[in-house]
Image (cartoon, rainbow, N blue to C red; front, side):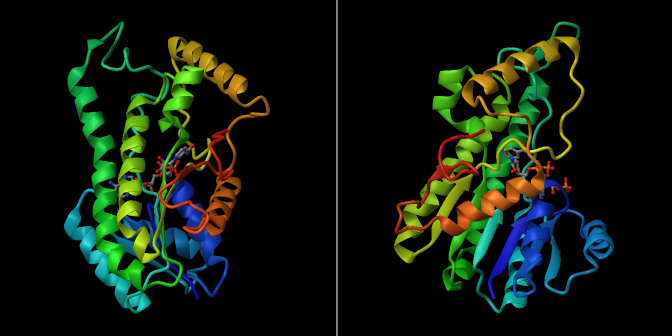
Amino acid sequence: MPSYVITGVSRGLGWEFMKQLSDDAENTVIGIVRNKPLTDKRVAEELSSRPNITILEADLTNYDELKNASINAASITGGSLDYLIANAAYSTPLDTYDNIGTLPGDTKRGQRPQELSDEFSKSVANVLGTIHLYNLFMLQILEGAAKKVVAISSGIADIDWINDYGNEALSLNAMSKAALNVATAKFSAQYKRDGVLFLSVCPGLVDTGHFVEPTPEQRARLEGMLAKFGEYAPGFKGPITPTESVKAVLSVVENASIAKGDGGRFLSHFGNKQWL
Ligand SMILES: NC(=O)c1ccc[n+]([C@@H]2O[C@H](COP(=O)([O-])OP(=O)(O)OC[C@H]3O[C@@H](n4cnc5c(N)ncnc54)[C@H](OP(=O)(O)O)[C@@H]3O)[C@@H](O)[C@H]2O)c1
């Protein structure tokens, strides 16, 4: 009867993790969201209030709320947790199409350094929140049978991919995921000896409704980016669905182990370093 805590289950990949994992009535699935009434309503409407799902409320940037969520989760599971999936993240819309040199401004409005600073801080807050999350749930993970902690990362943080294929976009997202990968590897270095597997996994490029309409200038950059993706992965046909992505990520998580040398690794949804 494995237990799971997943952050950011209100929508997107988090919702899909919760849905697929709670398909098995034996699993105990705890989702953490910022707006509990809204997610409870969605669970009631779309999943007929499955009895193996509990929704708790916490903002990743609020330590006290996260702490309360960890205490409430322990009271549901009896104090042991098998899997922690750190999925929640603020993804800035600022850098979807623009490269790092054009981020602080545009031709019409000029430089916008404050906006860049604010979006950078919000992106990096994801990492600090996840470090608090890991620490707050660590005792429960140590008591669990599976002992697996998963950060939902992104291949855009792979420096070799950036360098070899000139991946210019999504700089702030990439920097926050690079920091997340390091934090996750550092936790692995500390807790591997206790049998805890920490992993950073990229879910692939997934359509979760984020593709905002680009300006003509941005469209040109987008086309350049997609051409580079095609060069990198000749079979690339565009974003995959949350269903496909979560199925693949869960399979990577199931197959990975400390014994196979996976502790602290940064893997794609294929279980390797092929990001698309
Ligand atoms: N989609 C992709 O192509 C892709 C690719 C690579 C990596 N990823 C990663 O996969 C994960 C999920 O992506 P997604 O596309 O499903 O994202 P999404 O649709 O933007 O959903 C993000 C989730 O995180 C929650 N969240 C954001 N900030 C939070 C905070 N401060 N505290 C608590 N919860 C917070 C959101 O809650 P609210 O509803 O309250 O806002 C939402 O549930 C993210 O870590 C993302 O970086 C996605």
